[in-house]
Amino acid sequence: MSLAPPNNSVTKMEFDFIRQFILERSGIALDANRMYLVESRLGPLARRRQLNGISEVVARLRAQRSGDLALAVVEAMTTNETSFFRDVHPFESLRTTLFPEIIQQKGRVDLWCAACSTGQEPYSIAMVASESFPQLLSQKKLKILATDLSTEVLEKARSGRYSQLEVNRGLPAQLLVKYFKRQGRDWHISDRLKDAIEFQQTNLLTVRVAQKMDIIFLRNVLIYFKEDNKRRVLTNIRQALRPGGYLFLGGAETILGLDAAFETVRIGRTLCYRLK
Ligand SMILES: C[S@@+](CC[C@H](N)C(=O)[O-])C[C@H]1O[C@@H](n2cnc3c(N)ncnc32)[C@H](O)[C@@H]1O
Image (cartoon, rainbow, N blue to C red; front, side, top):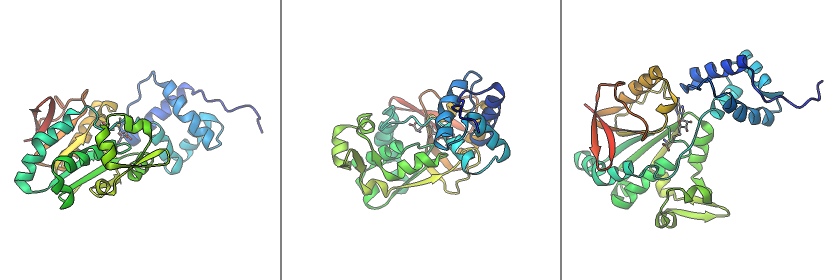
């Protein structure tokens, strides 16, 4: 038995294997210069699982490509950066334009928050509804489906527990006081908001949602994909959107050249896409 500390650097062959594995499982395309990212994310994972460095992680994945370790590796390679009311304007456009329009048309709103990470995005949407259209929540006329690939982030999202640092990012003080209770060092979100949201684990590469949504938030996830997978995800997303429904992407993302079924709509200071 070797007593040498595990080696957390990754060889070119191991990196290529991980890159391909992550691409197949999640659609996330790691650039060729991202070896450090694999080392910094999978090194700690190997340690937690008492494996002999990334080499042993790779060896085990080669032998068994599904199961618990495979899931943990994919999850470790996702980037889960998010915050309350991220980029503000999409949430503003719900308040000023889209919620009133859809409420008038059909009296309820069905919204899918795809790639919801740790939940700040769907909870921000629920707060917009509660503040400006309280009947949506009190009459259970708002349904938010919130999904992500990572079970770890979904667990946190479901718990609705956030640290001081997390609530300091983007959440106005009056909403913190109104919708959160302090418990120990954390802030817990109110059950009233939680009740409007259903969290589910899904992979955007393969997902099929039977329901027709009025609005889909698909923000800050396509940037990690190559063009073929972007198209594939957009096709899956489009099937879950009703004609005339709206799609929001992240500020650095566009649908132009990828899917001709959408037209661009400007609402206040945000751009979104309407399914023709
Ligand atoms: C950067 S976060 C974006 C969170 C939020 N939408 C926002 O804009 O703040 C990207 C999320 O996409 C998820 N993700 C990556 N690949 C995915 C896939 N194939 N299917 C579903 N979710 C995926 C990651 O787990 C991560 O939580």
